[in-house]
Length: 176
Image 1 (tube, one colour):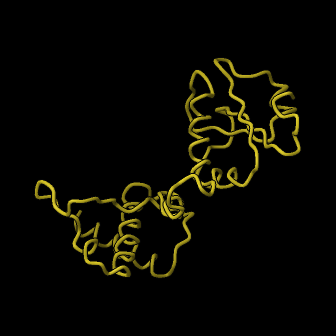
Image 2 (cartoon, rainbow, N blue to C red):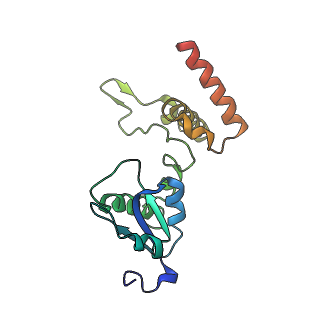
């Protein structure tokens, strides 16, 4: 109880492999709280009374066990902090990252435009922002379809997105 004397103003989170699995959606929810207390167990966990009487929420970072909750706490702090206004230099960064839209992020490229004969896609150096946006969306859909198709079930997809996914599926079938 001493951890959060102003308990009505703080969310108390118990980090446990028995909790709900942490996700970008949960990070976004946590970012809305003015104060969060993360309770980390170590080795055998915590006294059950802490879970039953103090914790408002239980969160896990995955289906595996670590020696303590310190690393999960660091992961949660980092994921939540980057959603707090002013933490990132560019607020758009958090809105376009993987999972922010329910999809994996499109491929990233930096300068130079060519390195060891590996070239940046022409559209990205064209200066045509609408075409760049289309390319990014298509690549995001393609990457998600190839690597994490499970995410497509929950993603907010437009009719154009659904048509693109079907076209990408057909293209993949032709290649295979």
